[in-house]
Image (cartoon, rainbow, N blue to C red; front, side, top):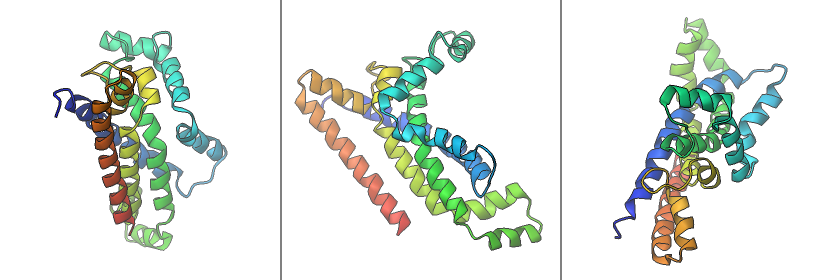
Amino acid sequence: MPANFWSPVKLSLEVASLSILIVVVLALIIGRFMANKKFKGKSLLETIFLLPLVLPPTVVGFLLIIIFGRNSLIGQMIETLFQQPVMFTYWAAVIASTVVAFPLMYQSFKTGLEAVDQDIENAARVDGAGEWKLFLFVSIPLASKSLISGGILSFARALGEFGATLMFAGNIPGKTQTTPTAIYIAIDSGDMQMAWLWVACMVGISFVMLFLVHFVRS
């Protein structure tokens, strides 16, 4: 195996794993707030949450540059706080992967929560369970299949992110070069051996992820 094979794979797995931790926390909080609720503006809010799922990756990357770039208020605050811009850093790759992976996790978990039997939750309330205790020990376990399958799909999506990562985080070997960007560069430079190795690795990981989703849902 070539010496430079593992660096993008390792970075991709690290970025995807950290992104999923963030995505799961966000999905738990936002999913709890949105599930089984009706309020003015809910459809608009959900449309915004799911938008990265249908937007071209280059559009997502462009918006991330606008939001976190050096000319934006958020970007300037980050640069002042950490003494460096967020663009073209490891954290830029994490942000890009988080944004594109969140819609899958959110939609899956919210659907799972809405499928929980309300009579069971009401019975727990009668027994004295508070809302957060009810959520943690009743709702989440009952929606666990949706949570797990959503997490696996989101991990696979974060692992395969290319367009937004390339625009926002760049392609710096050992720093922001994930496997998808490494494949692109390998093909562009004519290194088909490395491209095939990385493609085979990604296909293998994606196959395992999808198999696990079907196993959890069965």
